[in-house]
Image (cartoon, rainbow, N blue to C red; front, side, top):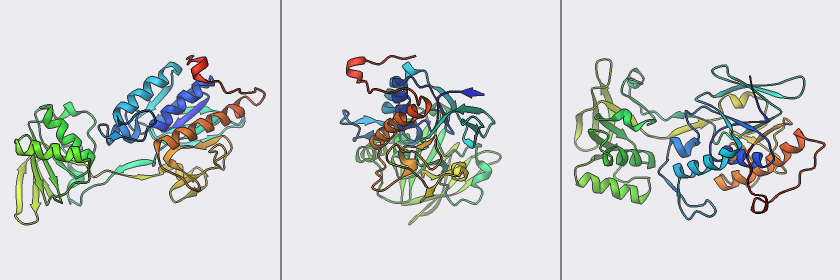
Length: 336
């Protein structure tokens, strides 16, 4: 049993910053996330995407933001249970909560903060009949370790930042032996700089760019050997490949959280804006996972919500102690 002061469900930017705010009040945190590394969407979907609305940073890459938040939280020694989704929550007789993951790992704390972003993510899959037969046999929906594709022929499908960024990365760093980017339109949804870079690399032969086309079939004996690309005008073509990576984004759902007795509205958790508490005392919801009047789904709003939730959590954990706000500019940051 892992015991702590605050269990944070979700290790995205809001969850990580909450560790810092809790640490200032000498509260320990343990984070649970279904993804294999901290950072949420910032690490998993668009690590190289610039973010422009973080105070003090005219521009910061999503991955760099996560690195900075991890460094900021480090003095307070947070614990992590990664690669395990939180499945159930039970209140004990002494008023604490036990959160159990899909793998059976149990965590106990008097406070639970749900910072699960948009929830549990499932990949958006293209409509290919035998797609699932090749999952983990050459079909991947998320690139976790680029070196896994070293010397391989990779067909990437998609027109957003993730497809663009990974096509550039695998080709620019000479990781994949061949990168083929397939997109059903002639225009892209990603950042203009990334779009232009892909076009430039395609002109130089570093990326094979196939637009107005879709991957409609996969062939192979026990693993991906080639894919069928159907062009809107030119018909079908066979492309030799070791990997097919459809990067169409991830669709969110609250997952098991929806069954925890929390008040839900439009696939989000309703909270009291006084302290972002839920209808269950001791459980808070911060960041994109919550909803209230005039809610804005911005990282900086989640930082604010986490800060106020921690102040409320301190009062619940230490009802006899008076918390006096101390400015870090005066007192500095002292870890445990």
